[in-house]
Amino acid sequence: MSRHEISLTVNGAEAKGEVEARLLLVHFLREDLDLTGTHIGCDTTSCGACTVILNGKAVKSCTVFAVQADGAEVETIEGVATEEGLHPLQEGFWEKHGLQCGYCTPGMILSAKHLLAKNPNPTEEEIRWGISGNLCRCTGYNKIVEAIQYAAEKLRNAETEEARQEVSA
Amino acid sequence: MIPGAFDYHSPSTLEEAVALLARHGDEAKILAGGQSLIPAMRFRLAAPEVLIDINRLEGLQYIREENGYLAIGGLTRESALEESPVVQQRYPLLADTARVIADPLVRNLATVGGNLAHADPANDHPATMLAYGASVVAQGPGGSRVLSIDDFFTDLFENALASDELLTEVRIPEPQPGSGGAYIKVERKVGDYAISAVAVQLRLHGEICSDVRIGLTNVSAVPFRATEAESCLEGKALSEEVLEAVGQAAAGQCDPSADLRGSVEYKRDLTRVLTQRAVTQAIARAKGGSQ
Image (cartoon, chains in turn purple, blue):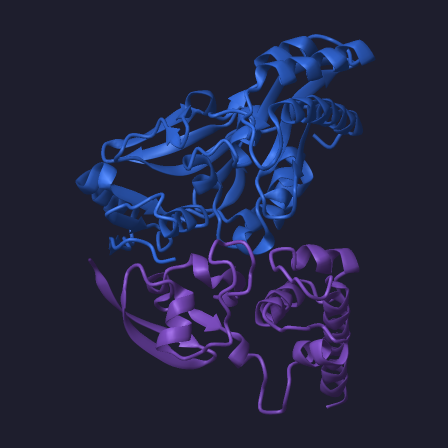
């Protein structure tokens, strides 16, 4: 059955591969690219552990074929931190104890990242709906919501500061 | 879980996609959002030999009012409905539905066309589109044709499209003055299918209801309209007696199966209650002027 050459951008770097059509994106990321931060939880499109950002939108990478991502931009948890350090979301999960076992965390962070890109100042209810495709069996979600609130505030403050500097410059 | 092997095609034009469908017939499946198809393939409930991925086709993602209806491109993502001002302002039944389909991650990929063409009575759009009296546009090798949604669902997971036809557009009639609608769904948790859900669309002339259409989700083998419940409300003003009759009729006409979501009796009674709530909400919206 058909095999395909694919070329995509993963966390800003070019990635290539020759894949069988039936290979799922999550398996390509984990097994071909060794990006094992993207977890496989339920394998049934239910839990969101495998969430990545595909062309700007948070999706379940177990429910996309790798061949569909040809030419796409993918962001995984490995691409979230920058050279300056942790992303405010990662910092928030640390500061607010947004994880216990950590299995759902990469997916939670990428869902939250997409949410905050669309809505920088979400209400608690909007956060809860925003992460409703991601299951956590440890925290009861409260700490995760606090972690996302922490990150939202920090990102908003950073943006205000940037705007201020632009005005003064 | 790994899907079975298949040949993958990613056409760049509609003509090419239809030609591939015509060539491969029943061996081929269209891959749109993939949020139902890929899980089914992983469970090996579906094992198509050929997948025709339509995600690279241009011009199938849009939401616009034209010629008296709301036209929705077949490949429009569910998340686009949630973000569409025209849907949020003028099509509350559709807005209600878009919010409760699966979960936000699934809605980023899942498509309106796929939700209908999959013809799963547990999906949410069939009931909604039945209540709207929508139609769908099918593109085949010889051109396109328009099908009424009332004729679209033929059996469990079966629709009226020919094997060489692709669903390219859904058309919802623009709401007339005094219209109102609502979709009310009860699910065990976000992401699950409905235990039962009810879509209502109607018009009010003073206190009198007309053009009543009621679609039910996941309480039958084929998506269907609760026509007997519609008749109980058509031409009448809402009263406690009428509301009771509407609910009873919907409960009587549905045909749920017992499963992990509940017994037949429970689902029937839930359908009765949800029908009453959706009718009440639709009428309130019709009075409030928000279609």
